[in-house]
Length: 314
Ligand SMILES: [Fe+2]
Image (cartoon, rainbow, N blue to C red; front, top):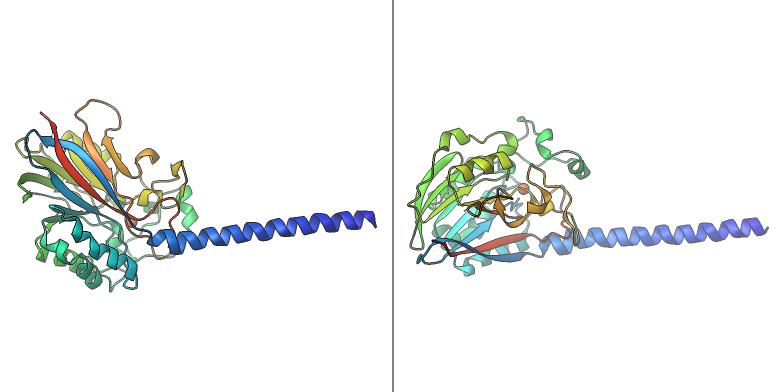
């Protein structure tokens, strides 16, 4: 009788613990899916990179919007970004996640499209999202799951829309533009995550006379960053990592979904990570969205970044 009572007591304790764990899990999931996923942040950085005496330049960096037409909070936050009055807008790809997303995206970019801009594609601009086990990122990157027979998204229409507004398409291309009062050499590659990058087609030393030499890529793959840096591109902008998307508070990203180290999964860093003082600056955006099949963010708010470039070299 005493034994049965003891077992009953243990069972009741275990059941209470299980219920509490399930409640905490459900609350965490609800927070990640509803609250944090829509808790957009504008990150601000100052980068001492311009020649002495040059006027400052404001770059708005957006990435990984992964837009589906029903994301009204995201659309309205995007629409508000023109108030940051950037001199140049850089979109590092993965903009859409639905066949009908191009129109709403271009509409939300709105007046930003009237400003100088550049863009590259990410793999998710080309292919429709697929339902996968999100935990697989813990042991391999999504490149391992890629296959070319996935349904395509209207990436050409997306690119046409941005180019029609005057933005430069930097998918394996170089160019030159004026933003603010600065002369900027730009170069970019298509997404290395699905082997679309062709750095050899854009290789060559950047013009040291340009006020800024800007390299743009979706996936911050170290081997590609090395080539931009070796060619003298002194500011490199990338996305793709989602900053880890689900992070351990105080410890950061668990995975980056590419070759970049976890310490540089998002934010402003240098490339190479160690070495001489004249290394390139690297900004990796944690991005604004998520795959519709993994609609959660934890410890890693969705973001856009306003980079203010100021004189800092002689
Ligand atoms: Fe993405």
